[in-house]
Length: 490
Image (cartoon, rainbow, N blue to C red; front, side, top):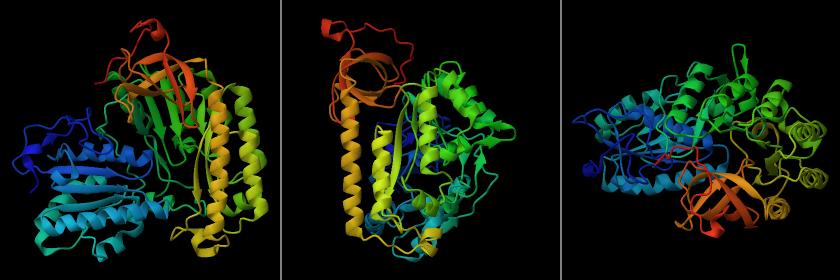
C-alpha cells in the first residue's frame, strides 16, 4: 500500500493532488471505508481528456477512493491518455516504462491506462512489459471500481483487467465530475465522432457520435454557477454537430447562455461543415457567448481537404469566416493545421500558407502528419513527404502564425479589456493570468483580484502568445476600482 497518511477525500484535495483536475467540487465521500485506497490521475491530451479525468474522479469518490498528493504516494496510478498523434502515445509509453520500474519495487502498485490509447493499443500494452493492471476505454469508466478491485485481488497472479467496449448509450448521466477550483468548467455535451476524417483515429477509439441529454448539460452548468463559476466551455469531438432529439447545438447554446450567473460561454472544437444559421444566430444574439471560435482548417488545399474527407472546400471555409465576421464584428479565430499529409505537394502547401495569410488566425495548433494505425489514410494513402520536408513546412507555418499573432497582439496596446481571472501566473505568483472575451491570455499584477473575478485590464505590451497589462486604475494606487460580480472560488 502507498502512504495512506496522505489520504484526501475526493472533493477536498490538497494543492496539486491530481494533474489536472484537483477537486474542490463534486460528491463528498462519507466516512472513510477501511479498504479505501489512494489514487492519482495523470492526464494526457485535449480538454476532453481533462473533462474525462474529472468524470473518473466523480466515479471513484463515491466508491471510497481518495486522492493521493502525488503519484509516488498513490496506491493506484491511472494514466488518462490520448491517441490522436504518435507523439502522445510515445509520451505515455515512456511514463509507463518509468512506472513499471516503480512497480518492481512496489509490486502492490496498480497501474491503469484509460481512454483513447487504451482502446487503440490496449492489447499491445497488456502483452508487453509495461506491467499494466487495468485498461478501460472512454465508455467504460463506470467499471473502474470493479476493475481496480479485481486487479488488487489478483495482483500477485499478474494479468490485466480490461473493459474496452464502446457503448453508444453511455452519456455518464448523473455522474458529478470532480472539477478543479476555477472560473471555467469543461462540460462534455457530445461523445464520439461520426466524421471519419482519413487521418483521425477518434471515431475508432471513442465510438460513434451521441449527444448528452440537454437536461444533464444544464444541470452541470447550473451547479457550476451555483458554486461561483462564471464560464463554461462546451466540449465535443465535433461539438456543433450536437443533437439530442429535436434539440440542436444552437438551441443548447442559447439555453446555456441563459443560465443565471454564467457570464461566458465557449465551445470547442466545432467542424466548419456543421455551422448552421440557427447556431450563428444564437452566437450573435447572446452577449454571454464569446466571440471567439477555434475553427480547425487542417489544410488550405482543396485536393488535400478532399483526401482528408473534411467535407468543406477552401472557398466554403473562407466564406464561413467572412460570414461570421460580418455577423459578429471583432470575432477572432484560432485553428489547427497539419502539414505533410500524404500527397501534399509544394502547391498544396503554398495554398495552406496563403489561407493562413488571408484569415490571419490569432494562433494555431500546428502538426506534422502522423500516421495512425487503423485509419483510412494509414491503410490507403502511402506517405509521400519526407520527415525533413515535413519539418521545413512546419517551421514555415509556425513562423508565419507567430508573426501574425505578434502583430495582432500589438494592436491591443493601450486598450482596456475585461479579463476573467483564472489564477496565478505559472512564472510569477505575484501576477495573475486570465482571458479576454476573445480568448487571449492576459498577465497582470495581482492587486486585489482573485480567481473568478471579472476585471478591467489596460494592455501595456504583448508577445505572440500573451498580453501584459495592469488593472485599470491601479496606476493611481487604487486596489479595487472595479465591481466584481463573481463569488471567489477558492
